[in-house]
Image 1 (cartoon, rainbow, N blue to C red):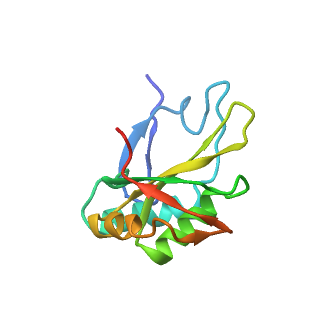
Image 2: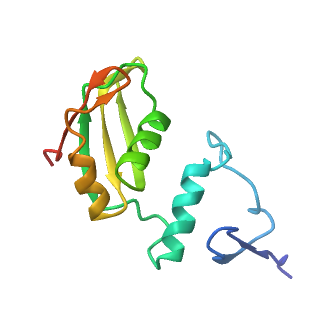
Length: 137
């Protein structure tokens, strides 16, 4: 007889799946289990409450330039959520050495948030005048 696995589930979306005993909670070499940031948990819960895919990050992307090299993704998300609306994703572009290159791409969950985000062009953030526009792609 084959050993029976067990049903495991996601604590956020309640999706469940069956796993064999030898696969339950084991990771492949080179992978590690990390805690999902609270920002992502909130986004997933909001998506589920709005009947969107859990991984939905938004369709309204903007380029944000002239950033201080010490700005973080958390700084950007906090500022833009307060000034424009819910941010689904923030990608602070970094060089090969891991340092910020001074620009980022933000994706807003709503069209309204994306439009408000564009109006922040020229506003001051951490002592620098923001350059905000639609991305080239």
